[in-house]
Image 1 (tube, rainbow, N blue to C red):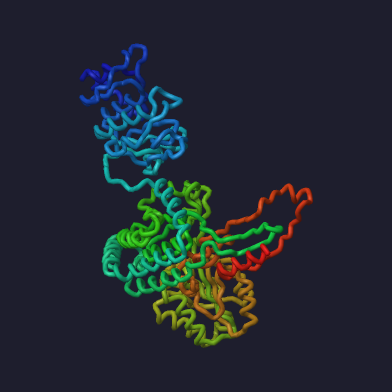
Image 2: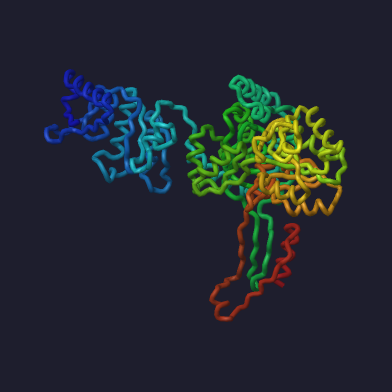
Length: 614
């Protein structure tokens, strides 16, 4: 459809134009509009003050048409990803995901025009602002991006969204940059300063206890009204007991933070006067995503502070009020020593999608939540390592030789202490010799008395004529008072079953035979393998780590409950006296490669240095 400027100025021709467009759309025909260059008059000065925009390029044409047809959305496509604070590619220039013309106009510097088209970003912004003022939503995006229109209409965070809202959250890219900068400041703080920050946070949890529980009660009320699953509601609940446990855990982390960062783990004398040290250092910036459990927030924040890492947190919307107040306490504790933005709270799912692509700012992602959440994060992460576990299918194997009371206590604790936890037992493997023995009935009676619903595995179902209903799968994480019971021949059969069906989280054996226990401990390929203890011990606080950012079933970097040590990497420090490789290549100097003792404290290190020089 070719149009000229008078088509908008004359009432009858404007009606004809709009009628033509609507008729085409009703016929499922997409109209493509352009100005009729053969008869169009030269461009005129914009008449924006009178509510009219000139048709001097495709941007102004699109804006005028969008307003005329009362469009819900106008998408202006460019050859860049959207509106930047400066020319794209210029150092320090940042993509704006939202833009308010009244607020952000002075923060944007326009560069040269686009390589294609007549407009340029300046023209697009003016056209978009005019359309926004006249009731049409606008997004500027990259026309080369695959499925850009589909993704924008689906609500994904693509390009720059124009808004009249003057109150906006900080862009996620800026939050990530601030976390990086704040983390570097945190690395320079002294052990005593880190200790003070974490201790203050621990104290604030008790001092503001009433405010925290009030906020949490709002979340619980809203969760119950919305019909949230009972397992998620139970994880959402905070209590005085939980806050006190958090306090104790944070104090433990504070006490451990004195020699975490910068600790020498290896020293080597490469040659005379050339000493190499490997020291611990923070990973950088962590993105931790968690569902339901607001108590994760202060735990993860304390571990991040102790390890010197910047941190971005994303909690579930069901814990909104709880997370807000806990995050405010974290920032209050940080403020005397490092920027508040060192630890930030991300609010929307769309922001997470953007962060998963920011491998220049985010160094490690740690999702804590459902199998669906972890799997989604692992799939969407763009080159950023993901640390965590997707399921908690934990087992307890009851061997032939057991202390029966001990076995019942361990199973009871593993299942009923906190059924929603990822370290709760989901499958009980019973040595087949117990099937016709009194212990088997005692086990079932105990589980039933605790309100546990029992499902049978295939072998148990075939052995019992009127047994429990079959389990939906031998790889089921119930997350509630339900459990699968299955028969196995012996410890080797149990190991084979666990290695096939478990999630490599935590598995335990109950036996009085130490040799059988040793076979089990060596044979089970899980992050945590226990003998005569409840699976519920798989926890950072119970391990003496103070807290955990999660339990990892990965096979590299960190495995099991991940505390401060799991949030560190190392770097190499080399001190020389003008050494050059050429001297060694020509035989003027020789390598020694002699391991040196690790210093117990700074004074000992200084003494060793003096010895070396002597």
